[in-house]
Image (cartoon, rainbow, N blue to C red; front, side, top):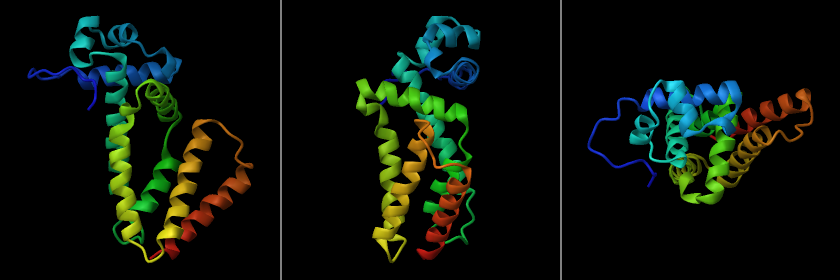
Length: 184
C-alpha cells in the first residue's frame, strides 16, 4: 500500500502536483524534488501538497503510479498482430523512455532503498506481465532471457553504464527484436 494520505476528499490537485514534480525533475533533477519545491512549482501551499501526498515517499509513489500508467499505455499501442506483444512492448518502452523518466526512476529506487514496499506496484505489474510473457510462448527459457536482457538495457541506461557503443547497442536491440519474433 502506498503512503498516500487516506481521505474521502477528492484529490483534484494531484495531477498538478505530479506535473510540478516532473517539471522540477526535468529542470533540476529528481534529487531536487521536495514537498516545498513542489508546492512552490504548483502554486500551492505546503499543506495543499501534503493533503494529496502525505510524505515525499508518497509523492514518489504517485510518480511511480503515473509512470506505470504511461508504461501500460505504451504497451497497449503495440499492435495485437505482433507475436509476443507484451515482451515487444517492454522492449519498446525501454527504448522510448525519456531521460526525465530515468531520473525519476532513480529517485524512486533511492527511496525504495529505505522502504522496499514503494516498489510493490511495479512488482505486481511485472509479475502479471511475466506470467503473460511466459505462457504466451513455446520457449519460456528463451523468453526469460529476452526479459532479462531488456531489464539489463533498462538498468544500463539508468545507471549510465557502458553500452559497447552505438553500433553494438543497435545490433543488440535488433537481435532482441529478432528473438522476440522467433518466440511465437
